[in-house]
Amino acid sequence: MTPTTKVETDPVPTQPKSWLELYPLELTTLKDEELPELRRVASEATLGEWKWFGNTDSKQFYLATQHAGRRFVMLFARYGMQNAQPVFQDLERHVMVKARDLVEYEVCPEAGPDAKDRRVYRRDIGRINHPDAIHMETFSPYNALRLLNKIDELQHRIKELEAPDPDPV
Image 1 (cartoon, rainbow, N blue to C red):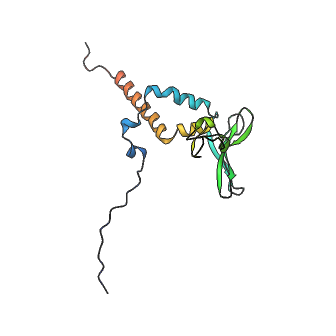
Image 2: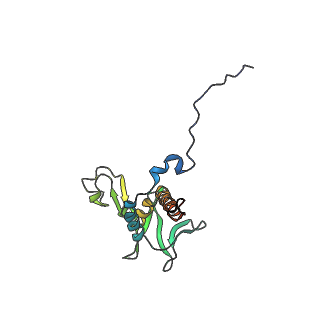
Image 3: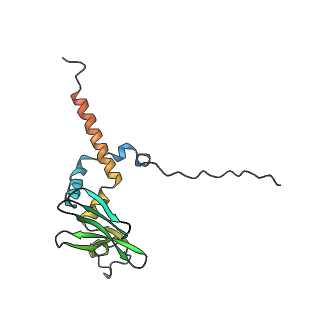
């Protein structure tokens, strides 16, 4: 039997357990001037509380709200042989629209979803131009934490203002 030699290796980096490990608190605090844009994005999204629905027997998953009846926020549709794409409800026409028909390309947003536009030389998606897709992107965990940090900041300020004056005149 030959003795084994222990080889020192670099430790495997661990994944952060939370956003707070990635971003210091001062970077995640929301600025007052950012609030109107967050309010605008939230007000344009589908109304109601969002919840996942579906059935594993029928292999169906969808995000919907029960506001004004069950209203779809997002479905998934086959895209090619092995992929799927989100499908969003057009609230004006009351039809479902595939994400590929709502994309804005990174290299030429003004081309809209027209992949045949000559200015679209690379088909990397810049955004999905639908209020619910924009809402999901905007209200990411990062921005949710920023909102909560702003609430904490304001609550702390309220406590300071409500505290009795230690040196009354």
